Every structure is written in C-alpha cells, then in structure tokens.
Length: 497
Image (cartoon, rainbow, N blue to C red; front, side):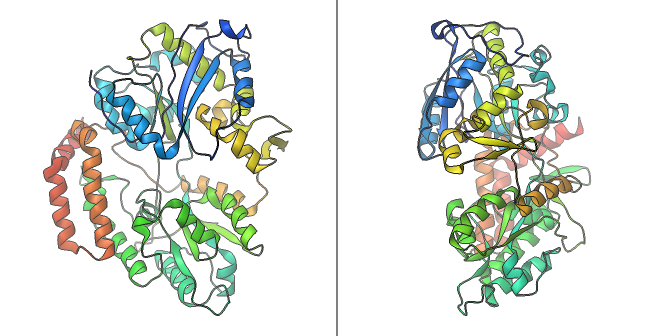
C-alpha cells in the first residue's frame, strides 16, 4: 500500500477497540453504560498549549457521547517527527486531519482506495447531514466526499493597525495600496508614539507567504489565488504581472526600512510581539486576531488603541481578497485502520454526537459558569488562562460551524473585534477564489512541496534583493522543469472537462 509523508495542519488518531450502535445520534445523549462496555476511541493530536489539559471536560464528553476517549498529546514542535514515524511504519491513524492546502497531496492515496468515501453515509446522520453543501462541494475529489470539515469564514484577511498612532499623525485607515505604503512610512519616520525616539516601524511580518502579509497584499494587487485563469487557461499565480507588482511593493517596504527586514526568518510569535509591544503599527493577516492582540498589548500599554480595515484597492482601483474553500481542515478515514463499514459508521456516529449543540458547546467552550458565561446567546470566556489550559486543546473535536452544529459564537464587547466580524462578511463580496480547488493534477499532488518551495525561495530572494527579474523568470523555468509544466497540463486538462 502506498504511503506518503505530508505536512499536516494537525492529525487525529482514532483506534476503535469495540463497536457501538450505528444509529444516528440525533438527540445528543450518548449511551451511558458502564465504562468498560463503551467503545474506546484513541486520539493523537498536537498540543498547542504549554500543558496537557486535565480530564474534566474529556470525561464529560465521554458521558455525553457514550465513548471512552483516550488522547496522546504530542508537543507541537515534536509533532511532525511523530507524524512522519506513523507514515514510515505504515501505521496510518483512523482519522487524519489535513489542512485545505494539503488536500492535493492526499489525492493519489484517495484514488488508490486508501480512504473511505463517506458521502453516501452522511444522509443517515441527522447532524452530519446538516453540513453545508457548498463547503462539501469544495472538498470533493472526483465528485465524491471523503472528509468531514471544520468550517471557517471564507476570508478573515485584512489589516490591524495602531489607531492611536494614526490619530497622532492625522491618518485615516488606508483604502489603497498607496495609502498603506504611506502609513507604513509615517509609522516608521514620523515618531507616531511621540516619544522623540526612532524606535518604530510600519509593518511587522513573518516567514509565511500565505498567512503572513504577502498573500493578502497580493490579492489587493489583483494576484490570483494560488492559480488563475487567463485566456481560458490555468496558470500559476507567480506568472501574472500582479505577483511581480506585489514583490516590488514588499521590496520597497523592506528596502526603505518600513517593515522588519528579517521577516523571512521571523516567527509568528516574534511578529506579533513586535506589534503588541509597540515596535510596529501594522499587522496584515486575520482581522479576528485583534481582540487577543489588544488584551496582550493593553497589559504593556493601557492606552493602546487598535482598529481594523479590510478594503484596500490596488493600482487598478479594484479590491479583491483571497479566500479559502470554507474549511480549515478535513477529517479523512483510512481503510488501513478503519477496516470495516461497521467501524466507519461507529466513528461517524461519534462525530454526529459532536455536532449536537450540547456536546459541541461542552467540547469547545467547557462548563457554563466555570469556563464561560452566556451573554445574549454568546459564550464569554470567564478566565482566558483557565480556558486555554483546560478547554482550548479540545477544539480537535470541532466539526462544521455554528450554523450547523449549534455551537455558540464567542461574545465580544471590544468594538474592533465586532467590526472585524462585519468586515469578514463584507469580504465575501470581493473573494478571489482558487480555480483548482476541485481540479486534479497527479504531478502537483506528488510534487507540490518541492514545486512550491522553488517559488517560495525565489519570492524571498527577489524581495531581499538577492535575485532580479531575470533570475525570477529563471526560477519559473526551474519550476516547470521540476514538474510544473506537467502539473499545468494536467490542471488544464481537468479544467477543460
């Protein structure tokens, strides 16, 4: 059986040691028999918090679903090693969680019949059948459904900026790329914090061309989302002139010192720290981060003020923003571990329980009165540190979105955070979608990591001034020779069908 090494958003390992009732869990009340009579489900997942959570919430989820749940928590920095070992030993987990950007890398294994097709089963489950058709369609492979999705907004991308700095300098929220550049310049050169020292920069960025600043800024310039269509032909984003325009824009920001010059080797933690501690005044990424940013920053400077902005027109006078397919991760079910249809149905029954409001809110928010309180039908975390330590890791259980699972939205009384939610909705009017989401290329599925790295390296080298335009074109040639040309041909054949 073929196996591959994949870079995953995260992995969930479920090992079933016995079977349970296969009927739909529409009521949200599990089988509360003695523990030894319950089926056991074993999870392995990356731990994103400093410590392993206690079992209090886990025990309550067990009681609600009628399953014994065992979790192996793997520190995030060791997770890839553990993951690679699982693949190397052909010990695939029962449930594989993959990010939407990794789906191409799984297509060969899926076509090999290594994963269960679950589409025909979903209608048998009252809650799983509520998953959104449009999101499921975006996850299909060859027209078939293989995964359960964790729903996400189509685009959270925008700007978080220091409103107090902008007010000090008489600046408004940028609405064009030129105004964004001028704000970055002013935040660097015009002493926005008024302390008389040259100790600020405009933009803080990190070593991530997707979730850092680059991809969002590229969409302002009209760059396609990974792949674009020109004269009825699929082409990679970096062959469009707008991609070169974006690199020149980022290069100018860096060359002038209007952003951190070492951004290609800057971690997300260091990037956000520069924003929160008052070193930088612009952050491009998920606008929904504004509340957590503010909570940390206000401990350092109680007078800090943030605001958010999404709409930034490019040189053509248009606004566009890249989008995801509506999910962050998919849960896939390998046949090597889930050996029978009965076992598959048992797993789906468990997930059906997880989509009831009672269980979803228990797993994602914890206990009411202890971890959260309800205000206007929304969950407000009582103690963020306690929530992070005891509840947050169990987000591995999330399936669907509030509209489908009935889980509470998070309460917010912080005005910029409320505005961010509105701007996320506004972004839906300007989405730049990836035209290859449902298209196929065996070559790209097999070589995506290698091909993407060629152009990632070239992009950084160009921005850093280590490569000119001719060198960038040579990198595109190298990309084509490494399999990119075959991938293009396959995507276009799929597109023309």
